[in-house]
Length: 216
Image 1 (cartoon, rainbow, N blue to C red):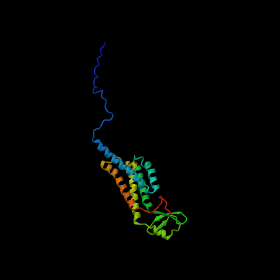
Image 2: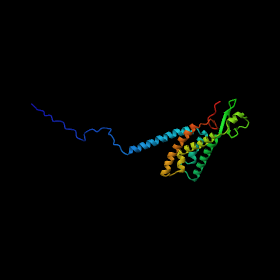
Image 3: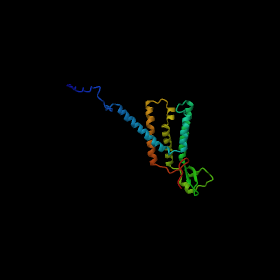
């Protein structure tokens, strides 16, 4: 008769014990850096959304010209003296276009034709001189202080778009200092917020050249 002696199973060693797949991580200082970077990314994202709205307040042709010619004239941000001058001239012309076109307006005559012209201190000056503008329409579209405010806001909006363009920033600020880098990051955000508030507070009723057409 055989007697079987059962030996107790050996306790699992420390190496044999299974470790959980997800181990809790101890908080480190990097979490605060991640929160700061996340806040910056959210601010930049909201700035781009706000800038898209602000860009819609600018002349479409001017914005498209700027976006098309900036990479070419600035050599994608790698500028020498010649390309830097050409980029500066482009910025000046686009800014001037945004300012001048803020004083343009239009209206629809009895036949539904859209008449474009400039607002002056004497009234509405039609570009097509063969068209006779009714005196009440000309007087109603005289230039005002709001037009100068809108023109100045157009310049600020265009400056915001230019500062958010990497080609422009890299062209004029190849190796910015820490202080200048902070200014380049915060200035477009502050500028966009201020312009948004002022544009909503003081809206314009003009439908100028290269903008949406007026309603009948």
